[in-house]
Amino acid sequence: MSEVLFKRVDYTVSKLLEDIELGNIGLPDIQRPFVWNTTKVRDLFDSMYRGFPIGYLLFWENGLPGEHRLIGLDGKQKAPTLLIVDGQQRLTSLYAVMRGVPVVDRNFRPFRIRLAFNPFERRFEVTNSAIERDPSWLPDISVLWQPTTSLLTFVNKFIEQLAKRRPLSDHEREQVYQAIDHLVDLRKYPLTALEVSSSVTEEQVAEIFVRINSRGTPLNQADFILTLMSVFWDDGRKQLEDFCRAAQTPLADKKPSPYNPYFQPVPDQLLRVGVALAFRRARLEHVYSLLRGKDLQTGEFSTQRRDEQFDILRRAQAEVLDLSNWHEFLKVLQRAGYTHPSLFTSETAILYTYALWLIGKCDFHVDPFELREVMAQWFFMASLTGRYSGSPETRMEQDLALLRGLSTADQFVRAWQAEIAAVLTRDYWEVTLPNELATASALSTGQSAFYAALCLLDAPVLYSQMTVKELLNPSVHAPKSALERHHIFPRGYLKRIGIEDSHDINQVANYTLAEWKDNVDMNDRAPSEYAPALEGRFAPAQLARMYELHGLPEQWYRMPYQDFLAERRKRMAAIIQRGFQHLQKGSSSGDSR
Image (cartoon, rainbow, N blue to C red):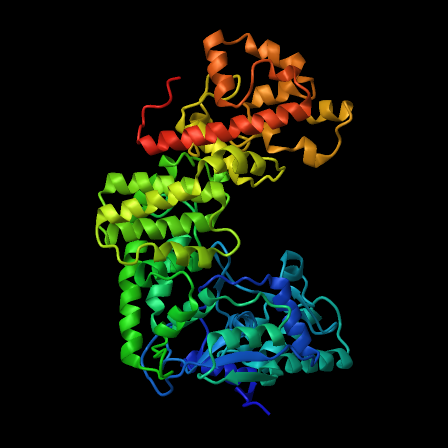
């Protein structure tokens, strides 16, 4: 028999909540986003009330028992000896309801989880206005576990209020006492925790989690590191979360904030940026071990080693969350032509480009102008090719390896330029990209790059005097999304000529950007009907440039549909290449052709 890696420990709900308050169990700050909906909390309490099991808890020893210091929630007396791996939402639900404390939702808005209980039906519900008006319900069961609540007085008052509405029999009164008494006794509800040894690796813990809890989302390394930050650097995790919360909406007083119209990160994303800057790593498993203070050779833990690694992460995270750095980096995305959030097909590409930009700024001291230019080219290439799709950590590890042995700003820049040239070859532009454009995907990297190229080339919107860059300005709030794609060969027209497959109709090459009125006017008419009338708005030279930039041959609307798609794919690929070459030149004057 293999060595048992865990021990089984029995708790009561009351003991668990007490250990959380003392700090023995590391439940992350109650003000972190609560991801369950309130009906799941209701069902949790209903199961407990009925005596049903609610599953095991999974804890992990932190490897440093006996260490004392104040962290996290007010009133904690020691560093947790147990980290919660599975059961955080259940424990947060129990803690929030039984202690009557608020939680925050995904958008960081505070709210109380208010559960109601009907002692006659022995039924739980999420409190609503109808329940509030119904005297047969306890509208907020949290009061039952408050230290100031006298249970006898509370129940007598409840019965008294109910009796004003209708007479109660002795049996009904006894029923109320028993039902509420049973509810209060949920503090004695038994729970079993599996406490995994500190010698177990995070990979083994993740596998244990998956095997005993198939309903849950598989754990990732960022989950482990964020939990570890809750224990040993709670301020650091709070800084990440405060930054992400502030990035959601602009401040009313217009003070500097991380808010922007392009990208609103979440904590584990920015953690990855900090890790890449601090340790030049994308894979987090070894970083987790380092932050635990573990010697990767001997397997021993050291508080000194742990503190040293957290100091490195602390310095890196300060750069990641620096508002000047953040907003200066966002200019990289704009410079690359990605001027609207709908153009981003990979948030990972944004994050890893930010990490590389920070490395260039902080470690190689690259000239700010030159750094913006080379990172804009890198982001364009990475977004177009889906570089960080599939196995992003592996790909980023390989990219970080390109920096080994480099020490100067010039070497940093040349390394990325060489890699870009190795990826965007002549074969890529002329063969690979046209083939990749043969897709109906709404998240086509090629389509986004095409619109970005149109922004870089200062192209007009098709059949409009407005430029694509103006149309995609995220600061302009239109009644519809700015990225309003329109079928060049309308859906209804294609169906009338026998093309009914959505994959054929929704080809990337059959889309363009259009202004709202044009989009409505085109309706389902044949292109040969609507296009000549729109052409009359423009001088021949204007029209020729417009068609060239939008990848449309002259008299395109008279072409058979499949021939049109094949020809436009080649032309779109050529315009994407042209936009990228324009970006490489470092010109900001627009394309005058």
